[in-house]
Amino acid sequence: MKLRWLRAPGIIRRLFPDFVWRYNSGEKKIYLTFDDGPIPESTMWTLDLLKEKGIKATFFCVGDNVRKYPNLYQRIIDDGHVVGNHTHNHLKGWYNNTQKYVENVILASEFIDSKLFRPPYGLIKRSQAKYLQTDYKIVMWDVLSGDYRQDISPERCYRDVMKKVRPGSILLFHNHLKSEKNMRYTIPRLIDELRAQGYEFGVCQ
Image (cartoon, rainbow, N blue to C red; front, side, top):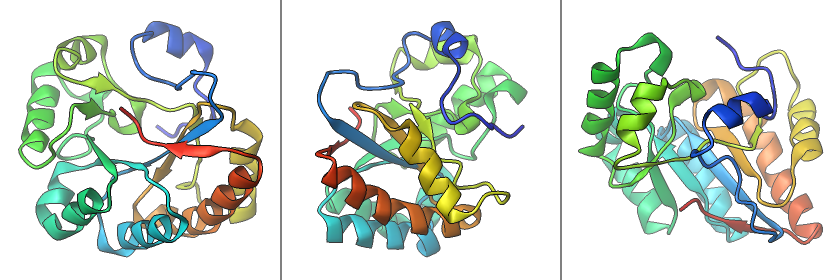
């Protein structure tokens, strides 16, 4: 299943009103988030850019990637960014029973110290969410960048995101190989343009 919308339809938000979709505090602030890492090829570049720009972000990490690259995960922490749990094996909630899904999140928690959770693909059953919400705040997104899409150009990715950004938006990008081209083009331009418009950057909490 490939999500094509940039912003989740209102009906989906209403089905899960307890999820964090946007920080609507009235502040002119944006929340950059990165899913699926850490991986050396992408996360290292992301961290270097954020350090250069003086920005903190939130990384929803896959437990097995943290297991493989503990030093890279530690750099995320040392650089002052926030981390979240993204399951251990990037599971789709809709295609796994609740027990298996929750156990996978618990396994990831052995490597990721966080009470934030984001379901891979945004796919989660009510039963899974109900169980996880006893321990986690579930953070979704306000703008899906589509950086993983191979059918759009980097310029299109940038323009699409900029059209949807608003105060309090949680922006979702990815740290994996298929998003590299669009993500690397979009992020630095996005940061510079949003700053020029008076936005600040925050982290999920």
